[in-house]
Amino acid sequence: MTEPQPVITSNKVTKFICSSCEFTGYLTLDGEVSELYLWLDDLGIEVLELVKNRVLKLGDYVVDREQWFEYTTPTPYSIVPDLDSYVRYLQQFVGKHIEGKTLLLSYSGGKDSTAALIILLKLQELVRFRLHVCYVHIPYLEPKINVDYVMEIGKRLGIDIEVLEPPRWIVRKYLMKEGLPYRRSRWCTYLKVRPLRSIRKVIGADFEVTGDRLLECRKRFKRLMALLERSTFISGKEFRPIYPLTIVDIVKICRESTGIVHPQYLRGFSRVSCTYCPYRSTYEVLISSVDEVEDPGLIDSVLRMSYEKWYRDYVDFSDFIRYGLWRYVPKVAKMFSLLRDSIRKEIEKGCARGAVKLGEVTDAYRSIWVKELPQFPTVSIEVFHEFLKKRCGILSKEVTN
Image (cartoon, rainbow, N blue to C red; front, side):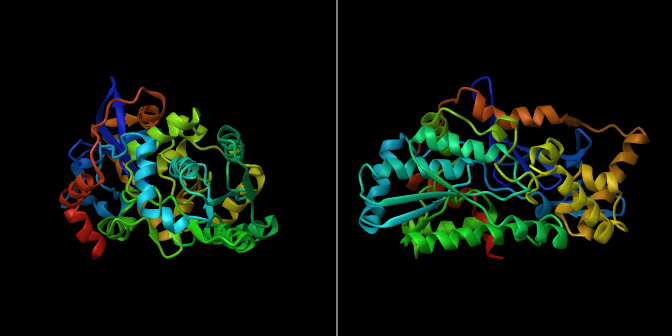
């Protein structure tokens, strides 16, 4: 996860938290990294002092911090004074384009797609269009609670959500041949898209609604900033109703409109995903459990097969499992394993380093979902746009390059 999330303490935002790959960090309100932790068992070990010129170096081991701990700019703002006014604002730009059309929303259960769904339902009160909502379940990789939550949201909002899934035999075939999805081969995404393509043809969808947001990750920043420059929400056949919203807006909409919070957020996860998502960060791997999925024995067999086939000569099996090193190609897995060994040896020699407990991090992520939300400053989209151009000037150049 690359979007910094506000941490609420004593009814105010004190800092931001962000996790990416092996690291969890805290950011100041101005967006500077103030603490950076590498996970070692249930403790995050402070490594910020090892970072020079955005490169983390310990002995012979060098890790590019920019590559492995990336984040977007923290935004303690709201651009949505209230849901109704935002929906009326949206209507001005998209009303004539979607009038009488069929829209397809691929619902994930996460905060962004939930906010998009809520906004679409409110928009239907002003604009006549057909809305089809579907959820693609990935067998074996996904926690069982995800489908239960989707069904509960459907009941709360009074809509039907169609549950789809790729053929189970195909998922098993990929697992036994490719192993778990990893960062250079997310075969799960391909299997998720296929049912969506089929349903899109069946219902004759005119537009596909996406829950992309500007500050969700760096890769989307430049592309979606271009939409913001043109004040448009529709590009080709894609409709992005929430792309300019901040994480504050998204959480407010979800909490105020549904009355329930996804169990993964309540456990302290930064995002809703499969248990074996290669883009989970290490702290999320540490709080995950194989018992969450429907066939733990199958996953255990796949992990052992993958280790023997590709990772045996690179990392220790216990580290491979505990830290979810299957998320990376073997050489990257080895890099992080050696870095962790170096930190461990330093500590054994008596080198004192600051640390953060796993529970402290999960509490920080939970805070925006369980604590009373403070009054965040509300600005117009135009003012927010100017803020982004000033704050993210360096970021946009990095994305361009």
